[in-house]
Amino acid sequence: MEWNSLFFKMKNKKVFVMGSGEVGFRRAERFLDAESEVIIAGTRLSEKLKQKGAILKQIDANNNDNNVLLNELKELVDWADLVVVASDNHELNDKISLMADDKLLNRADFPQKGNIIVPTKFNIGEIEISIYTGGKSPLMAKELKKKISKLINTKDILQIELQDYLRNILKERKLNQKERKNVLYEVFNDDNIKKLIEKENMEEAKKHILMKVDFKN
Image (cartoon, rainbow, N blue to C red; front, side, top):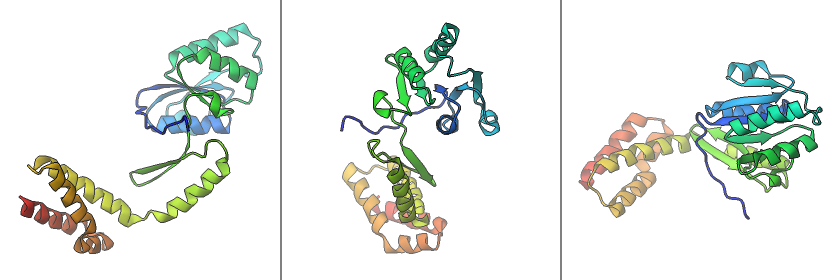
């Protein structure tokens, strides 16, 4: 597969979304939640997106022969760090994609024509999981999302919190890499800590962790 999954830090990045339909709004909200600056070109803007900081550039996507329109869109493309094409006018979508040249480009209509894929994603606590089927089945991506969601529970989230707590402690201690790895696995497999996680007693679990680390020192 020529595509590779990555995470981009989108805070303060400029995102231009072409299209004010359901897909455009969904993409826009995703980048607004990542603290990006978002301008949407279209005919409307939902109140929800407006409250999150989105700006509407009022245009009629069907007037794709209008040079003034194309010049305005070119300015938005030049402004953006990421261009999202999500209108139902494929001819206009192609023109905007050509304008984007070597910029980051997401094509909602034909993903393979862009260089950025926006996969189905969901969060459980601080865990973020993305699913991409190569564009073969968005429906199955949603079904897989439901299945995976059922597999991750509160205990997993608490275990991640404890591992993060432990890793921060180990960074301050003079343990070599092998010793740090061993402690992380010991804590992960510790039956007492597992019981404390079951009871969601994080304070006692952290005390137990400190005892293990102190013993190693």
